[in-house]
Amino acid sequence: MKIKAYLKPHCGWSNGVRAIMRKYNLAYEDIDIINNRDNYAEMVQKSGQPLSPCVEVDGVMLADVSGEEVENYLLSNDLVKPSDAQLDIPTNQGCSDEEHAKMATKTIRFF
Image 1 (cartoon, one colour):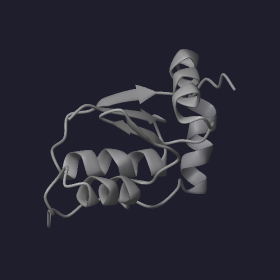
Image 2 (image 1 turned 90 degrees about the vertical axis):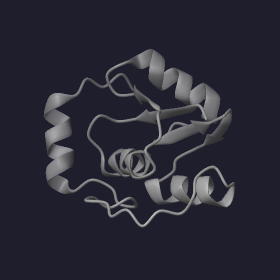
Image 3 (image 1 turned 60 degrees about the horizontal axis):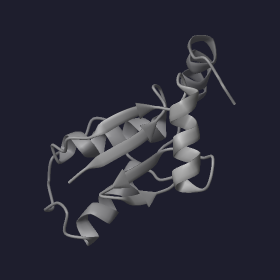
């Protein structure tokens, strides 16, 4: 399975997607859309919209999804087997105010 995840370096939604990838031990390409304008443009072109995270699984684009939604897609399409592995972070939650403040001081925005 080929997975490309268009993610922000520090984001609750993006971290939820990363957690699902760890839960199922899936190899994936973590594509930074904040610090690379070409990556962001590629995500928008492929997904048809500007919101993230977006995850492409074997050519199927899941646009503006949470980790929970990615997990549901993988399970419902028999791409992974159910797992009882516990996660240390939520898979369906945005950033806290503190995380937003941290991102505002450390990232370069192209859009």
